[in-house]
Amino acid sequence: MAEATTDVRLATGPFDPAHELEAFTAAHPEAGGIVSFLGQVRAGGGVEALELQHYEPLTLPAMKALAARVRERWELDGLLLIHRSGVMEPGAPIVLVAAAARHRRDAFAAADFAMDHLKSESWFWKREKAGGEWRWIEPRDQDFEDIARWG
Amino acid sequence: MGTGMDLPSSERESASRITLVFLGRLEDLAGGGSRAVAAASSIDAVIDALEPQLARALREPRVKLAVNGILLQDNDAPVLRHGDEIAFLPPVSGG
Image (cartoon, rainbow over all chains, first blue to last red):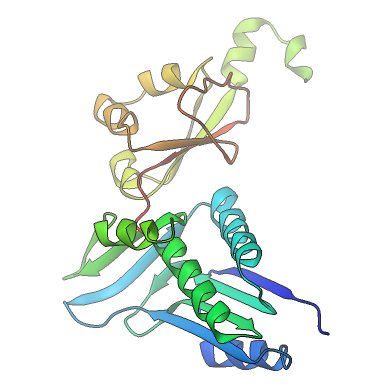
C-alpha cells in the first residue's frame, strides 16, 4: 500500500491545476476516487485584478494544520492543497484542493470541508482592482455560514 | 541575552527596535506594510506612540495580534524585546 501523502503549498506564482492534478492522480493509483475543487479569479464586474496577501509566519502553518485536521477526520490516501498569494488576473487559478480516497464520500466531504475552512479561516487578505483602483474585500457572512454546518 | 547590557541605558533604549506589520486595509492606513519603531515595554505603549487614527484602527476588537508569529489571546500582554515583530491582522477576507 502506498503511503498516504499530504501536500500543502502556498504558491506565490502561477500554478497549473491540470498538471498538479495529473501528478496527484498518478501518485495515488490505489485510490478509487479523487475529488478536486479549483477556484479561479472570477471574470466580470469590471474586476481587472485580484490580490491575495498572506503573512508568512501564519498562513502556511495554518494551512498545514487544516490539512492535518482533514486527515484525522476522513480516511484518505492523499490530500493536496495549493493556494495562491500575490496578484492574479481573471481566469487565473487561486486554489486547488484534491482528496484521494478508497471511497468517494470521504473524498467529497474532505475536499468540501477543506474548502469551507480555507475560505473562512485562512490567513489571506484580499483586494480587487476595478477602474484602476484597489479596494479591500471584507469577510462575507456566507463564508461563516458555510463553516458553521460542519459543527 | 545580549551585548546591550554593556551600553548605558539611554543607548540601549535607542538601539532597541521592533517591527510592526500591517496586513490588509491596515497597510493603507499605515502607509506601508511594515515599519520599524522604537521598542516600548508593552504593546499598548507601542500603539500609543503611533498616529491617533492608525492607533484607533489597530485597537478595533476585530483586529488580532501576533507577536513573532504567535497569535495573542485576549488577555496576553507580552513583554517586548529588541527585534520582536508585531503583526496587526484585520478580519481575513477568505481565500
